[in-house]
Amino acid sequence: MQFITFLWENSKFFVFDRSFLETCLVILALYLFMHYGMVLRRLHNNAKHLDEVAGVDKRNKHWFYGHMKHYINNETGLLRLIQRFKTFPLMISHWIGPVMTILLVYHPDSVHAVLTSGAPKNDLWYRFIRPWIGDGLLTSKGTKWFRNRRLLTSAFHYKVLK
Image (cartoon, rainbow, N blue to C red):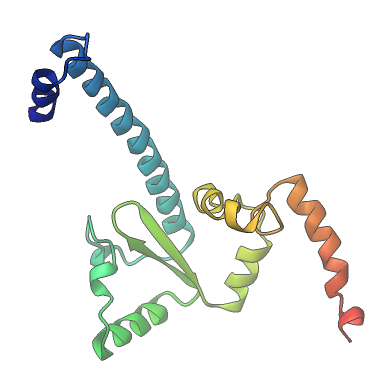
């Protein structure tokens, strides 16, 4: 409010009244809240879906920090992490904050299942790195990904690598 008052009193180029500027700022704030709220909701729903697939330690999960407060850089933190690996022998989902999760896959059967699945890729991360590495095998999806993968598979055949 003080910023709007300052602009109103110290500038002569505004032809709008004060209520118009306040209305515009409220509309902008509502738009940003709705847009980023939907993005965070989608991230949270994706993370909850990972919890259904993998094991998650729900009793030690904080509503805001997730599992981050359990990562301590000492022997106790390492022993706690090893205990989680023993509790969930195939894979585990670790929450980072209220909306994001990391899937730790460490059993060979689980790694094979994750890598051979046709599940969609995390679009947010790939949109972030695509300008730097291009639209290749890592960031492409659908028919383009399948075509590139088919071209590269023959190059890594056992007889070629021999």
